[in-house]
Image (cartoon, rainbow, N blue to C red; front, side, top):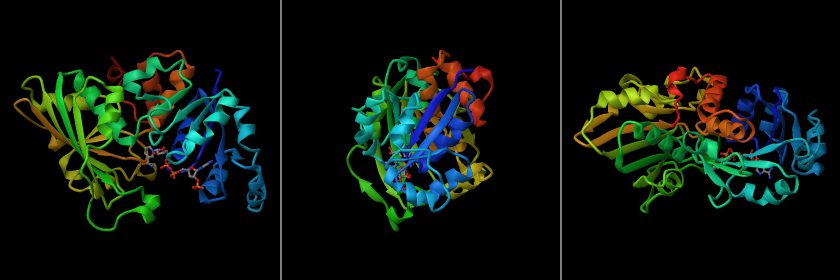
Length: 341
Ligand SMILES: NC(=O)c1ccc[n+]([C@@H]2O[C@H](COP(=O)([O-])OP(=O)(O)OC[C@H]3O[C@@H](n4cnc5c(N)ncnc54)[C@H](OP(=O)(O)O)[C@@H]3O)[C@@H](O)[C@H]2O)c1
């Protein structure tokens, strides 16, 4: 099987997870990762046998001093890959786009980048539309989660209106120096998530509000959805249970964000690349559907990032692409769940 040659620029929260996931795919090869300085992540990458490249070859001596032998600079990597997944912090990828274009490689961007740079992607919505795109932007963590949820529900009923309150983590666990220490940080305006969802689901009427809380274990989203008819909560649970990349968590494990996190501590780093629906929060009152969801911001976009690479370079159908990724990541459901409409 011909493998897609993948390069990653930026090996932080998202980059290290994408690198690991690429290495689990039988149709992809991780050619290398670009670093801009020597840090603990570079040492970890070295231990894992990941080929290391530098944003600037002048950094070479720093790396040699700790017995890491970089294989070259970013241009050397670009000569040997078909696609770059740029996982640098918000705004940085845009600065590299000219270079990527010069080497004629396709680029996957993450959700921190502006939506004007590339087509916004979610596996359940536009996998078959991005084959000819050279710049694909995987939607942000919350948008990815909300779109998966709405995709699941749209197969059961029409949605009249969606309101989501997002209680966001102040920051990631490894960036606690940036976090707030007390109280909630409040944005009174509509949050950007609604517009981002509408890039993928333009017909959905959605409004979102967000606050940031002093926590790092995953965002908590509270949904209130107007549906087109009276329905029953068991049907909603069944739909979520069947849908790929969504898991139901029973009440006894979901009394706090810490207990949600603990419920998945057996997974590597506690990663939860699936949306977690708090099962007992699901309630239907007439034509109103209420529930809560937990979103692990650090890992939820990893499956979609892998799909987006495959969407460009394979001839598989959308449902086969999603299934293949889920199987490789060990999060797959039965084949019958992968009927992507
Ligand atoms: N973290 C999340 O929860 C999350 C969720 C969904 C989407 N995203 C999006 O994913 C993207 C990456 O975010 P992140 O949280 O993974 O950031 P991060 O943890 O700060 O990692 C970014 C990494 O990129 C490196 N870097 C910066 N400039 C570079 C350059 N020019 N060349 C090579 N490496 C460079 C940084 O190196 P240094 O260590 O030297 O700074 C850092 O290791 C952003 O668009 C973000 O919005 C993040």
